Image (cartoon, rainbow, N blue to C red):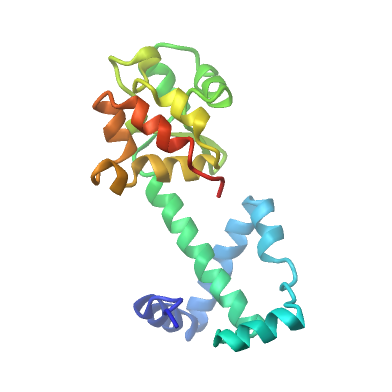
Length: 200
């Protein structure tokens, strides 16, 4: 069976959790994160899902190892921490609404309106809207990369998933990211692939 948790990550996590200071730090971190994201808190703190007997027997026949509710929560915690690490990395070098407004020569409200209308990508982070810098182009319409609003509209996923998809090298594009493709004026190819992306 494939390893679910990276051994190095597991070792470091165990090292942290074996000290009172580490447990306190993790507890405070989780409390801070969950108190700011009610949807995530309700999902993470919900009772463990019970597995039907027939599903359990089927899993046993396949040789899938069962995990205890505590192990399932631990895996969910690791997944949660990885998700927040990804979020942090994806929002690095983002711009504030004030900076975007000044850069585009528009009112402070306009960037927020463009996010609502699907013309810009922005994510609330610590009660501040953050705009990834790579989406802007001084030569593009409204200061944005040509074709980006159409691609944003076609992508059927969350804003964070859109950022991830747009900035991740894609084998279909010979290892280029969708953003790099848009900068090469290959909007039709990117739009075609964006329409195939399922919500996640």
